[in-house]
Figure (tube, rainbow, N blue to C red):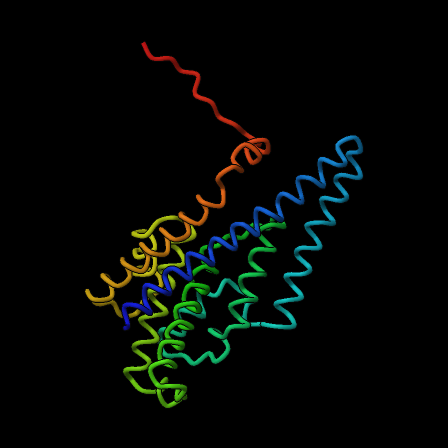
Length: 241
């Protein structure tokens, strides 16, 4: 049953990356159409560009400030602290996860110099921890309590899921299963066993595969439309003899 929870968490992480990618593409499409509508008036177009990005950034700031202040950073230092035994009660909650997904999508769409590396570690850890809690809830028939989480075995299990979830987040976001494992192994984990390697590889593979399959299915028929917005198109003009 634990393997079912692990592989399910990988698929959920991949689906989360798919939703974030499509939302980012949609926000970017709106920005492009907005600029195209002002192609005859450059000052107005520049003003709308600034206002649109500022609106996205302000919305992300409001979400973080009033709903989940713990999301002010990337989440990577907090994840390290959590795996070292520090108690951060709100770090892996559902509202924290949703706020992180929304805010990072908004700030990336706004053009800020931020990326998905650290946030995807946090998102993956939160998703896998949520799947673990749901798995334990079903097994205990609703009797999940803090006593379960405070046991040594419970903490080790949560740490393992958070570690594997962080690797799955990197793997799905960058389509790099082995890279996700190596990143978490070097930068995040405090304890790593051969069993964790095998579990992480399976979950990262499922996460990357599910994200790429969903993106491929959703992008069929949209290639020609996206190609019209390529800024720098590099063509190979070399000829073979």
